[in-house]
Length: 358
Image 1: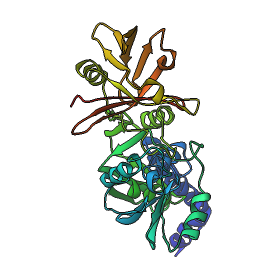
Image 2: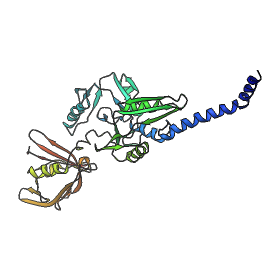
Image 3: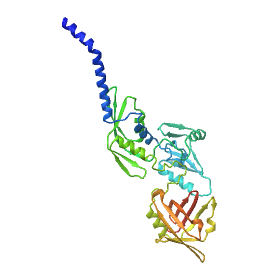
Image 4: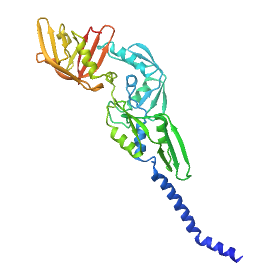
């Protein structure tokens, strides 16, 4: 009996200390888990990942002219009076072809309601009429205004992640297969959760190149550095990316292989000047010279092309034809059954050559 009383006194004496010790050890175990690798919902990396996985609303601007949501496909639209069923993003080209059919009309597009839209955070909403749609569209940021989504880098899935809960000390493993799943994963983290990623993972840059990332610190630095490294194309110019796959070699070959180019379009300072150059023919040579012929007159100059994708510059310098002289940006190469067209832009100015070469 005396021994039992003595033991109870010792427990009472040191019980508080033992309880504190247990709590400290548990806390140390949680801190050890965090220090071994991981991030919480309020960490900078979590914010960068969430912004990278937002639904990019600019990809379908040819339809909705809204950067903060996309229209769920399939959808039926009326384009300049013609009905078009848009089932996939490839069908955007059908809409663009109708817009491009005439340069002098006003392009209009209307939805056949009801439609479903998907916001940046993947929340969807049914829209029943044009008035409701216009209100939602007007609430979005305008063209090329700063927004939260990071479009210059993408994740390559699947990605294996884990969550350690510092209260339950339980670890949950998850396989993530899409931006929506990754966005929801970050958004749903609790205050007591520590997330980790199984490395290596692969990220894809805006030029389609792939990079292997091997740690959380490297991933944070990589997203942070890449977020402003590209044109996020948050404008409403539906055909300004038609040359994203163009090459310097392609434009050099087309301009030199085809002959007797004529002026299909020439707009300078909102003035249409193509009629002034009816009868002029242009020929581009591999040696960097260009000649223009009109009746008995010949005009000589130089030309060059350099760059890639949407950043190809075509420089034309013909001293006697100042309207053509500029560092033009290659906007589009169009090859139809009977004609080839090369569309050049300089700000709001436009020059389009046309040849019967196919």
